[in-house]
Length: 441
Image (cartoon, rainbow, N blue to C red; front, side, top):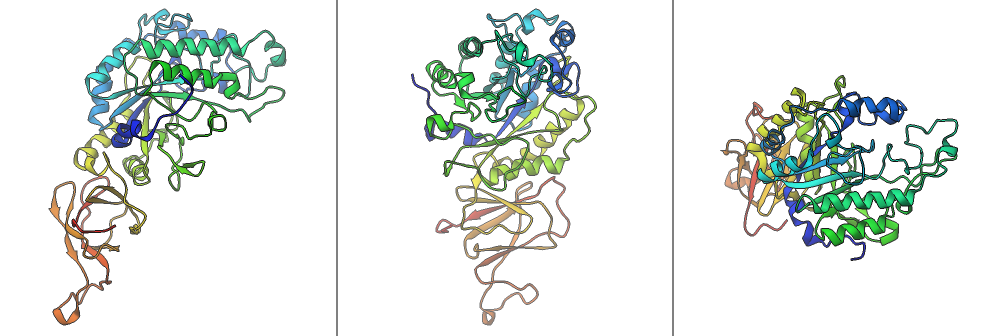
């Protein structure tokens, strides 16, 4: 089968689900100071080996992880089967650098897949194209040895063709050993990032066309992201476009086309477990990130970095609970929703999502008593606060001769909602509008 991306109908489940869990877990959980610690601190293989020799996640219970993901309202999960450090969470037959050879002594992916699948979540694997442990991976801008005085000489004898074949062997294992896989999240290409005399890496280094063709042969319906550096080669957008750690101002477009996309974010500033990191997002930021993405037609993939013992720390648990509490009451403004439509003006400090004849107004700031929605006059049959289904009064301009509201200036063609003075005690309040059957928006 040739290298290709999927038609839109194959991605319907992804667009419906809207919210997933990213999990970054590996040896870097032990130093606990960022998943790029080996590169950032230029740690050699000998020193980094200490983490391999002490990796023993004795409290690892993927059933707990899966239960927390489901309670948080997440619908799919993406786990780092192998991150840049090259360590594999499964019993790969083509390397000794794997979880089964650590004190933990077991394949960590099999129980993970079983637990999350049992909770009804779809399964995704992250696989790093980068590998700072493999002897054939050439030293480059991101490699821990990039500043070694003999870096160029050390690259002699390394062969990226052998490494590309190694990757295909591992991807084959992942796509044949664990049943149906729904997402394959490759990371990442940097062909335009030379460093000194060390070139960056792109599709030629990864042999991306062969890799994608293998994926399609083994699992034709798996969604593949945009980091294989294949856009100019194939000339079509990828299955998923993945902006990272920033909120787009508008929905991304690729080759001037609308695309399926998700942004990926962290609870704090690190993907892997970081004991001392302090920039954890507030409840408002967490919910607003989700709403913002869906309002622009995208998904949110929110990351957890488990500890070296295999647990979610209390900060991560609390953040997941923020999502769970809010989505328990407001989930139908997210799941299955997308943008409201270009013809509907968005009120100040609000975001709109829509699912058929339901329009959802997410209030990022609580106004005093009245919210004005231009263009919706005469088009709404009923309005209520979503968290408790309490009615919200609707005011619309009428002929003064028939009697009108003399205290609130109403604009013809607009709908004004009369809100309670006190803000509801939810992280982001939502008004649910039931559109009339003949409403044209």
